[in-house]
Structure formats: structure tokens, C-alpha cells
Length: 307
Length: 307
Image: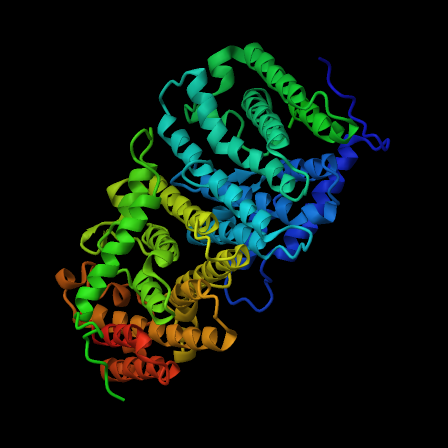
């Protein structure tokens, strides 16, 4: 199975499309964040700093591409895209804390607790999590039933809590210095990043009136494979990129003695595994029409990315 | 205006009723928390530790008493009562962290980050917040509309995020060492504890099909006054109680140079202010029937408590 060419049906390059989606979610995020004006505290500024950090917006892009695949107008996807990105941003702020990964840099900029202070960073993360749920509950989209909106809250909650992202981070912390099997490593990533990446395709899917469990399962499989692929490539880049390209300290995972795919499989083995996951992602949506091309291109982009 | 005698209409003493409600929410909480069995991490144990900490369960008691006032069966209030307590428990875990109040004891027991470690405590708080929203979204109560359930998510989100509890904690942190006016102190508490205390009466109110905005406003006023009263009494007890009775380090607020009611108003002035808030609470529900007696007794209990 070969990769999709990175050009969309409208002739737009995929990188341009990514930029469009990134800008789109940035606007949605800014409009949903609390105003800094009139605030007597640093909290709104810290929340904004955490969210507008030059990230790749993989989760919102997944949400928009899923919207495109299911013929949902992009404007209707904004709230879901913003909610998953808020949840992701909060998790990065907390992961970077001294008690967790103790990172000073995130994408070349000081981490939130370095730019502000530790207490403010903890609170900014806390408030971003609350906001992610609140915007889903306040979603003004009249074309979605309250039942579907409630389902979206539940999907986000299950993806981020003790059965999802928080569990993954906990497994990660308790794995430092231990050797994991491939299965254990995959279990960690399925929780730590996979659950929210799956939520990024499932939330917009709930906006579709025709959605059925067969399609939800296929999207879930797609996202599971893409999520693991993303993580494997992340581990590879941690080994092969220099600090400048990566925007974080190169070799940070190895320095922390964290289990990684290259450590388990070797660099070439890890690359083959990433390619395998990419092919699984394509296979899970293989017989679906050109509406799903953006999801295909996104998977190609993720396996081929160099930063 | 005199205090209610602390005996319920059924002749039960209010302290016994409190115990009933405390036990009730404990059962609900345990049933909703993730299982420790089968978990490879400390996360479920830390969440349980944070929640089963011998607290007074003021917020769940408020929720049940509101349910009683509005003729809602207690079983239907369980989810709301558990959700507000999870949110409260998470906030305590994060407030106690070294970067925040740096407390070693909470109700006479090691704080969560002392019993486990800092990273696990941060994650346990994060996962408890996610769970609070998730249980509201999963609420199996068929007698409540999805619209009302969604409204409950929104109420909890707004109470706990950047316009509510997190803002209050941020104001608190930035107030250390500064002198606040009474108005500023009240603004801090209205956010830090008042917002979630209001949510504790508004969530069960959403379970009532006859609820209207007039009743919501009265309950909101009641809870606002009770919340401030609780906080004033807390500040007073921090000055007058010994460490053993209080279960936390006596004079901790003063040691941290935190603004308090006794510092602003003197001990007697603070006592009078608490009594005033209690009377405001009673006034906001004064012409309502005996169904509201538990809420009245709860206000009496809060202003008279000695621990």
C-alpha cells in the first residue's frame, strides 16, 4: 500500500490545508478562552500561553478532516476541535511540571511553569480542562441533539480521565527506569495519547446524524493506528533530530531512561513499525470514498514528518 | 432571626441526618471511582485516598438537602452529590501541592502528595475533575432530560473553571502578602469556594421538572450566603482551634500571611459577619415551607460549627 500524494482533491497542498485548519482552530480557541482584559490574575494569560504555543494541532486537524469525511460543515466542528486541543494543552502543561517531566522548553519556548510559575501552570491546566467540558456543554449548534452533545462530553471525559489520558501519564511515570515490553509500551501510548486522538475523530462523528457504530468503529481504528504511528515517529525524532528542529531537548526521553520504540525495536525496526501503523490506518478506511482523503493524507503526513 | 433547632421534622437530630448523607455520598463515590483491582498504577488508589478523606461533605449535604426541599428522591441526587465532591476533592489535592499551599496534613492525615507523590497527586486531581464531568454526562436518570443533564455539565464547568474555582485559587495565590479589602476578600471566596457551593444546590435543582428561575435565584442566594459563612467560620477556626481539633496546622493561613476575615474585621467582627451571612441565607428562603428546613438547619450548623 503506497502513501497518498499530499495534495487534496481541490488541488491544495496538504501542508496548506493543515495551515488552514491550524488557523481555524486558533481563532476558535481564542474566542472560547477567558478574556485577559479585566482579569486581576495571570490565569487567563497562562491559559492562552498554554494553548497558543505553536503546536501542530494534530487533534483539531483530525477533527476537521473527520468533519470533511462525514460532510459536516467545518464551522460545526470548531467547538469539538477546540475542546480536544484545550484538553491536550492542559495535559502538556501538567506533564512539563517539575514533579512530572520537568521540562523547561516546549516547542522552543519556555514551558508554562517557566513563563509564569508552577502554581499558575497547575491552575491554567485545571481551568483548561474545565473549559474543554464547558464548551462542549455550551455548544450552540442547533443541528446536534442534546443527547449527542451529552455523548460528546462523555467521550471527552472517558478519553481524558482515569481510563484514558491520566492513566497513560500514570503508567508513563511508573515506567521510568523499567523495561517495558512492546505490548506494555503500546498500552501506555494507547492511554496517554491514543485515547484523546480517538476522541478527536469520535467527537465530530457525533455531529453527523447518519453516524452508526460501524463507522464509529472504523474511525476509532483509524485514530488508534494514527495515534500509535504519531508516537513512534515522536520517539524516532527524539533520537535523530537536533534540539533546534525539535523545539525540545533532544534525547530527553532517553536521558530520562523512558521506554521508547527505538530502544525496543531499534531505529529501523521502529521506522518499519510506524509504516505498519500508517498502513493499518489506511486499511481501516480503505473502501471509503474520496471524502476520506484528508484522513489518508494526514496519516501519510504523520508517518513522514521530520519535526 | 433565631437559629433553627438542629432537629429535623422527623425528629432526627441534624447531626444524625448529616451522617446519613455523608454515608450516602461515600457509597455513591466509591461506586463511581475507578477500581483499584487490575490497575497497574497508583492512580485509582490516589483518587480514592483523595476522596475518602474524612471530609464534612458539605457540598453533597447541600445537594441532598436541596433535593429534599424540592421533593426529589435522594437516589436521584447521588450523581450530582458525588460530582461536586469529586470536584472539591480534586481542588484540595491541587491546593495542597508544594507549589500551592504546601500542606503536609489534611484533616489529620498526610495530604495526597505526601501519601503518594507529587506527580501522582497532580494526576489524581486531574482524573477526579474529568470523572466529575463524566458521571454527570453518564447520569442514567431517565427522569431528567438530556437538556437538563447538559445544563448540569455546564453549571459544574462554569463553577470550577477560569470564572469559578480556579479563578478563586489564582486570586488567593496572588493575594498572599497583600492586604485585601473586605470586598476583595469576598470576591476571592465567592470564586474559590462559593461557585462550587452554589453548584451544589443548582445541580440537584436541575433535577426538578418544576424548577424556575425565581427558585434558582433564591437557591443561588442561599448558597452564596452559606458559602461565605462557611469561609468566615473557617478563618475563625484557623485562629481559635488547636491543630488536633482542626486536623490541619493551626494558624496556617496567618503563617502564610493570607488575608482572613479575623485579620480584617477582628475576631468578634468576623463572628458577627458570619452570623449576618447565616441570616441572609435564611432570608433568601424565609417564606418557603418546612421542606426547606434541612437547608435552614444546615446554615445553622455551618455558622455554629467548631471544627
